[in-house]
Each structure stands twice: as structure tokens, then as C-alpha cells.
Image (tube, rainbow, N blue to C red; front, side, top):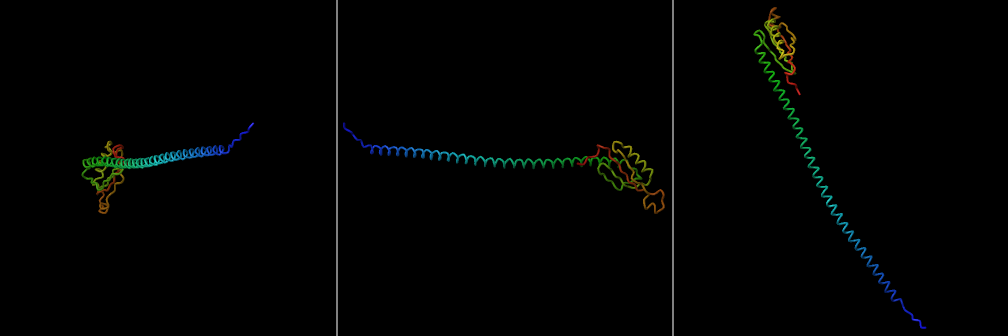
Length: 194
């Protein structure tokens, strides 16, 4: 029997080299695939980041626009409130001036010849009249007429009536008298101040 010896060394080294090349090829393929995936993922993340940045800028611009619109609306509301107060004040002044005109017309018609008005003021529904009267009886009659005007006055008070200083010095008992009257305007007729 004859023994045949085979030298397997060259085959082994060739097989090892093939295996090394295959492992190296697989390694390079995996690394290449990993690099490609990494690059693709990085590109996708950069795109997402750019889109997110654009979205945030747009959102910030919208927030600024909304804040400006809110400020404009608030400014307009404030202006409307100011204008409403001005309109209310003008309406109150108009009502009060109409009432004062009506009162002056009434006083012009009703005041007796022996009574003169020196001072006239109107504040918060109270008409204050100060003047002189030659006759206390005419003043009393006129005061009674004022109290009788229930659609104009709710109450008429005579604050004082006294003999004028000049008549007192002359020793005149029936001389000129000073007076002051407060007439309270009927509720609902005078303008309410706002």
C-alpha cells in the first residue's frame, strides 16, 4: 500500500486569505453601509433641524403679529372707553345746560320786580340764588311760587334773609334785604355726573 501525502498548506493559506478577504469585504461593506446610513440620517436630521428652525421663526413671527394685534385692539378699546366717557360727559353737559336754560327762562318769567339776583350757581342738582329784595313779602311770595313748581324743584330752602348793611346804617327798617336760596332740582331732571 502506498501512502499518498498531500500538502494542504497552500490550500489552507489560500482558504485563510479568501476568508480574510471575505471578512474584510464584509467589514468594509458593513462600515460603508453604516457610513451611508449615518450620512443619510445626518442629512435627514439636518433637514428636520432646518425645517424646525423655519417653523420656529414662523411661529415667532406669528406670535409677534398676534401681540401687535392684541396691543392694537387694546389701544382701540382704550380709545373707545375714552370716547365713551367724553360722549357721556358731553351728554351730561348738554342735559345740564338744557336744564340751566330752562331754569333761567323760568326765573326770568317768574322773578318779581322788587327782587334782583346777584349770583346764580348750579352744582350737582342744587340751584343757589343770592340777591337783593326790596320787599320781604314779595320775596316770600316768589319763594312760595318756587316751592309750588314741583316738576322743577323737590325742595326750596331759604338759607338766610337779612337787612343789607347800607339799609341798617341808614336806620331804615324796611330797606333792602339780602337773601340766599337753595333750590333742589327734582330727581331725574338734573344730569348725573360720571
